[in-house]
Length: 513
Image 1 (cartoon, rainbow, N blue to C red):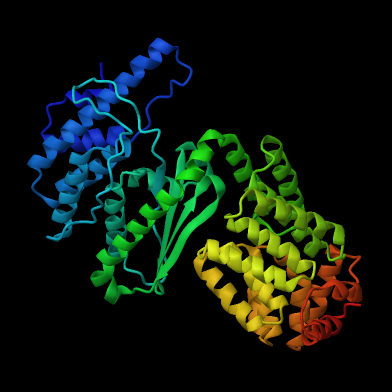
Image 2 (image 1 turned 180 degrees about the vertical axis):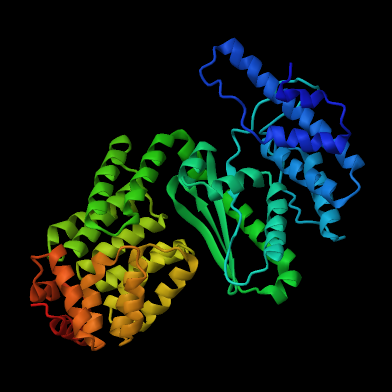
């Protein structure tokens, strides 16, 4: 009888056998979730036995590998073994040595002397049953998206250096590149991340402007770190190791800093899952999306009433509704501020909480209090693009559109695939600087620019295109037929009169009354 696991007993030479076993073990095991206890135990032992045989084949093949294709197979197989057992020092060293052979470098490949954490005890007898690495958080490095004229070979080499460095860490189980690539290209990326029990996502993008990298704690949808490296084809070769080492060491640092939040997630995973589901509704800056998110956040708070991220998210829904309806309903902002203060009280070090408090204070007219809250959010999380976006909005309303434009530009650089409110805020900053064409470009790049049609109509009017101004004014009035210009301007929080008058001028020229 032909069965796929016969390859483990095949008479192939070690390298060819490793290739065959690798292809087999990359495929998922049959799901026996509901199997009775005795059968489940037997299945677990069999799976572990196959992993151990895979490791044995890897070690044997590494001793026989001669050509580059052989070493590539050894390297990729070592990554798979380390995903299963990150504590295997011998395979870590084998991976490092193999990578040096492939890259032709005599230098030591990114090595980190972290203290041993006894998450797994491997008993080196074939068929021995060992625990899985469930206690280690799982981290995935998604393959980079490439833009412009980036050399894919150099980009791949850089990401490979980062991967090798991550595999030497003791604080995370690194998902093998084969799985990472499938996640990157899957239509339901978030679903795949959840299916693979991934806690941390490291995303990279490369363009002619350099390398952008960010680390996200998935359960809270929180950006722990993000940075842009100004490297191009001429400097990538010389700086590759340096940049990779910096990224790996920074990731290692944040894994340590986030241990408390990870432990909290593991004790109450249902709270984080509910929150993550809730926040997806805020991806569109529309009234229906905001109201769906509000209901979802309320459901999360039923599970845990003091969960600061959900309190902050609920606060945001009231602030955004105030903007989107443009009726000057102060009760919405009273709710937003109260929830923002609850979030800050529940978690004083949560940047999101200070951000939402700052947003509610801004719209209530406390511009100085708002700026202070956003400043605190930036201090707590300098790479938190959403907080920088809110900070930019506050600066524009504080009659400092030039500073606001700088801040929103930085936010967009840290979050290149930014949501629509980033573009809206950038458009507002440009409008008050007299850059009407740039403001129009920002709004028209929004996925759904319906919420910004009033500003778009004002931009076209100030740019002298009365026809388009009228068209967008009519569309804005269809969305909000109760809009009253003077009532809206009376509650719009701006520090200096010139700014309000400039906005009034654009709206009047567009035909708003």
